[in-house]
Length: 166
Image (cartoon, rainbow, N blue to C red; front, side):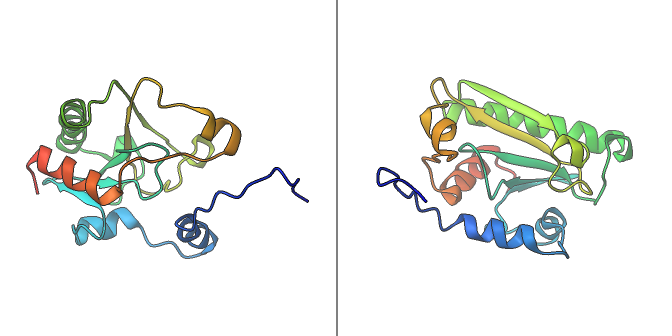
């Protein structure tokens, strides 16, 4: 039982994540976004080979996923043009985030396989997360909660306009 000093931090938007995680049959949201590149699917940009999508459940503002448009699980499955496109998009997004979001640094990486933390192991994707001096504070450490200061749609629009890819 919680003590009388315990306070609740309501995060009702997390219920969608919890409910989705409990489902047995997961449709690939990246494939869906590639087929229907809309703001509702949080698509930032789409190129011939790749798609950029906002992370619907980010741990930091601006967290995007860059993925091949095809449902491919491993780096070795990507052709040269797709690999080049992914990393050129990462480079361009990093520049847009530096300029428009004033990011001080970045975490960029791949989680390959469930053991490495891949939540969607069947569709390879590159995480790009902008970081700021002092963005790690007591909330995630003590409360297990991230505070996202900007609405995800506002961030999506800002990045999409900055890339100019539509």
